[in-house]
Image 1 (tube, rainbow, N blue to C red):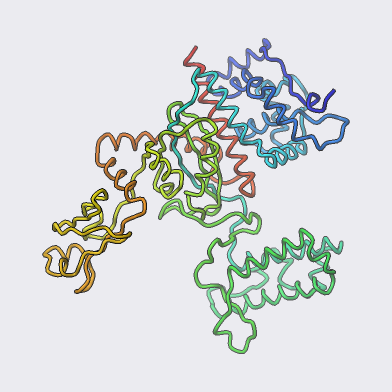
Image 2: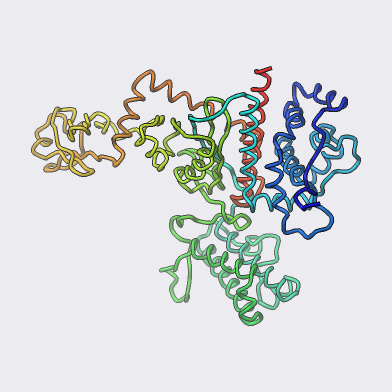
Length: 531
């Protein structure tokens, strides 16, 4: 039998009497289980199962693996119930709803193991097939709802996702990175890490806490400085031991090479030469300010500091979704480090969305306005709905109080003075501004200089957004974006505030599962409405 055929998942399509009884008891609080049981054959059709089978083409012939379609269903149930790999095995043994969906009702053993589930997840992410979960849920919703897509109205939104790695200050960041280096070096020479530390003369590592080993008054700046130099001496001792003990080939092999690179990176980003070091050669101090793209965790190097708003800081990632507004289905997801601008998420979201149809209306918030997708949507004459940035100038006249006529290429100030637009800055002459009665309310420029107005390269788009917001119809269109905020809130409630996995790739996979679940609930509503 061909390899692809041996790992197909072929559970019964028709419900047994016991399954009908379980489904009837799931009408209030377990609709997802009943829906997945009724539609598992459609969700995991021949085409999708064929793609999943390709994940295992590198396995030798022999005992076939657990059907990957069954494992994909397990990952969905994990997300729905928020359970670990170990918990998933237990649920498959003790929970009749899980057993019904997985086709093992009444079994005393789970049809998979933790190791198999971990391996499947790794293969699924490596091949990018977790995005197919969203595609299949959309296709199923299309069939149950009896509609198809040609023109799409799409809304985008984002929410914080705190990273799973521990966020550390400069001392702990360097100490943690150094400990990883020592552990990798110990593995290369096949000795206990305590032996390596003793041979290297390292005295600060190996304790329950680096700061406990330093044992200083952390409010004393001089003691902090001496503690930092002691830690850097520890770094040099470990480096010297590695140079003297390991050959060149060992030093450039992973994981030691990666650990050394991570150590160098955190030292370079957080420390700078100390100009007040005096006679102490090579003295360093903690960098004034924050390095761009600063790594904040050793456990998860992809985590970053960021902001959702002025009042909301993020230590980890941002998660993004793209939702089709007419039927309420999520068409795309993405996860990025928290310090990345939101416009950079639009490219992967757009690719996923446009595989389902043409976007004729895009509903976004201000963070996405600088994206190519927003600009091209407007330039092509399609609808772009977004609150424009507010022009701020304190209590003085803002840019919005100037009449900007792009067609005629002129700007008229509140006092009636007109000036031609040349380039991206309009400069009113001092001869017009100095004697003006409104000068004090318009500009803080010194005598002899007039007011300036910046003209954005996308000024036409911003003017159109401002005009739309000023009308009842435009404000009503802005409110049409609310459903994407509700969907993202549902996902955040299920997924939680903190990431389950380390790294962006695994967290994108995780978000795909929750988008799949959200779409299944929508498809279930379509099915019940059509009944």
